[in-house]
Length: 229
Image (cartoon, rainbow, N blue to C red; front, side):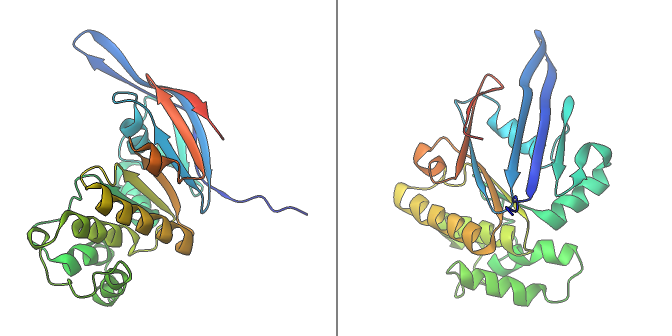
């Protein structure tokens, strides 16, 4: 008997339409996908193809014009903003191109923040442990301006993984890094994906990075034009 892997993220006929100066603009049109637990999916396409919009909809950061998104059995369309935020805090981690670290907090405090928002008592211990895991155990008390770009992105990765999310969304995670540093961060990203079985969904212009994912979905003008799903 074969046991099918559980689908942790699914979208059905997902569309996003906005009103622009010249009328209605379709950014995404009926995109459907499913991602299994522990898998990795790259979303690729030219600028303006809808990649980042799709990532935001899948993560529950924005609402679609039509269609549905389900994360670990939770239909995001049936939830209000507060409930969607709870799903994100509990199940989702984010890594962005521009790091989004808080400049007034040191590395340890940036990583502790999502745990403190949940009222967890062991936030400092867990933050220190995950920072050590990404090679920053001696940089706990350094502020973002005292860290290199690669180190800042490793802090961002630690923050994304510290609460043990089922899903990690990464939007151009190496876009602001030089080639060597970007390669090191990419290795770390996939190491964490493999070791923790965290489902990885990333957007990237870097086809080398995208090729490391098990599956690829290509967008053009808001439509899926190629997928190995």
